[in-house]
Length: 191
Length: 329
Image (cartoon, rainbow over all chains, first blue to last red; front, side):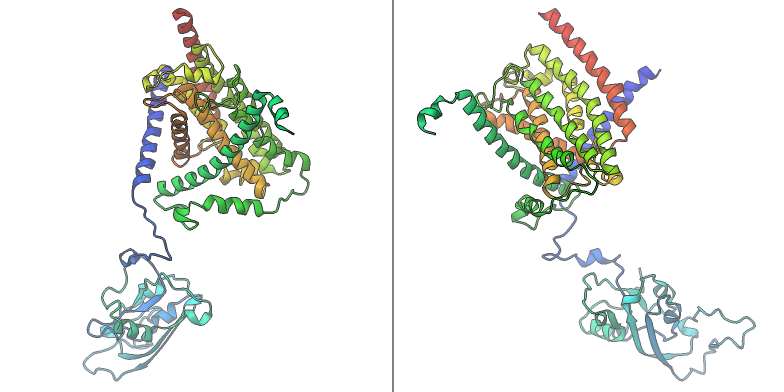
């Protein structure tokens, strides 16, 4: 039977090559997908999935104020030790019963890498939030685990620099600057 | 040399000399042009601009590339056979102008009229295999040697159906003279040999792509496996000459296909060299598009395609043509 089927298969194979040529020729005449970088820039709508360095997310009421509750989980989790969070305790609200910090009052000690949600945490005031980007591996553990949804990846595609200092960020200042320029508002924490 | 001694030179010789000179210029210009076209086609097929920065729309990119190649150091690898190593690129390029000399670009635009034009082209085309073989052997490099082994087995295999398909047309017209072969066809597409011999044209085209080591039959280069095959050790213009020879060979096979199958310089309305060039560049563009469309074939696929399909088909086609010519004559 091979003598009958083989020519048919061969003709089908030849036809598939014509189909392949049609694909490349139609693509040849379609508009280009790339941009001429120094003269053009990527439209912001194409940057949604870009994972730049992390940035703070502002609250809905005040975009210049971070949602951060100062728990420090991100700095604790960071495998590259590139986050430095400084916060101070605020007076506790007597109407709320908070989870204890050390877990001494619980039968089971709380896992180290876990923070209570904002409503059950002792209120803290974020004083400073520093990112040392040149050691960051963009693993995203901080973004994933932030209990307050206060971290996300920025879409800064064009970040470039010639010194280490260029990659050390004061993220609170950055957030204030963004809010002043009407930059990214609060909203979704991460995609 | 005064005027009278110039007149004493045989006009045939003068024509040959001027023709060769013009053809070398034609080849060099085409090398630049095809380099640009190839990169532009590659770019646009993949939805990107291709060369764009040097000159308007990257038009001067080929000159920049050529300048870079010429400026590079020519290094001979340690342990290589210097003579063979440097003979190879020369041997790849030198037969190329000779192949062009028998090609009838127009009614009276040709370097040399010979009744063995087709044989001349096919025999000089064989030098390319020798050049690749020498390059592979002389480089003292395992990739080069493997590439050369592939190139030789491929070229030897594909030369046979190529010859057989060309022979079918030659039988039909009773001549090996390219000018006569082209002239025996009419102006309209249905009067061309491709209308009578579509199978021979198909076989010729596939074999020609394989003979010139173009994708999808570029196993001799196979950069993912053999870095660059036979070109691995060549730097600067050594590599550049191989590339020039590759593009020139593409033009040669395009020219022969045009003369044999597509009516040469004949065409509807105003036959002339422009028709020849238009058809030839169309074929070359098709070859370039094929490179950016098809994945490289495996070695066993390459040889199976030749020995199990093209060879028997070419033989059957030749026998059928011979029979038809005998019965009709």
